[in-house]
Image (cartoon, rainbow, N blue to C red; front, side, top):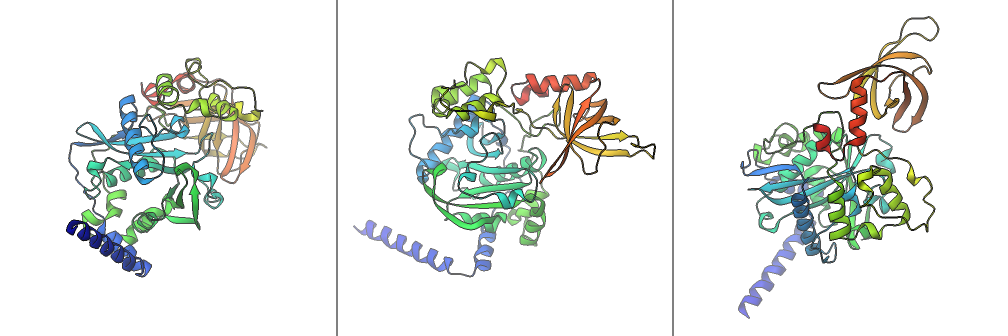
Length: 433
């Protein structure tokens, strides 16, 4: 009885302290949160951070995530012991893992917009974020193994740093969005400078078993300035600005890329079959439209036997157009003569975002004449460049910028190899060869 009374007293004291803390002015609360931050700028060499790509790594990530979500009430226990969603099947999702002594102890996923959109867009309005331009990634599926949850951020902060570095340098991302429990939102606001989406709380978030959720966003173009101001003068182990924006962790193993791709697909036919058919029946539960969208991503013959068949009960409409597995952003330029015997336009910068054997699509900041041949140079990778004769044949104006479709006269060998690799490669490792 004495032990029960002590436990009850401690619980009431804890609740009273939380209530007192919640009544402090917001700047004071956020200052306390920032003083609590503890990031090790030189973690142990036993810690490794990498993209989860093997069946063993992905299984461990999904298992840690399942246990964390069940423990928090965000999902009901699954017989598989794994939390696997349809977003994990897409090449636009990257799952990171933290390994300690070779064992996965933490995970986080970045979901960039793909054929199924974002998990949180079903309940949160992203129009304000989209209006600013740039790619969006939802940060999701964050979990740390129980044995490492009370280590003062020894796993959490390296994972968050890896996520930030990957999104800014590898994932072509400007905006991060999250949906978190209302009890946790102030941590993200205070430590990481997220701002709430429409200042609303959703009472029942379907993607988290009906748990309440708050949506928030961070513009990575503003983040350096915000972090510098918020952590100015802090010592190294308390300074998340230096940690995220100035410091390099040798523990982070960024993927090796031959070409300027901006995502790292890992799902082979065998992995898709294992996780989404055999272990957790995700594919059979999809609607016909969702199945058609999945087929539009994985069009190679090797994937056909693992993808779910359509029942014919829905009009899938435009879902069957092709969606490339690899996103790219290749810098280049075009030299164009004048359209009316005037001075040449000179170098006009291009950002190539889609390619085919006979053409490409590129963003361009300057107006281009149509149907005028020019010399195009495109940097396909760090050591591979393509030289082409091409012409802009159409223009498309969007909220995110102006895009031109180009037709190529005669692709060179580097271009043909590049397009072939994108069409035939199943995973990012195939492109690195």
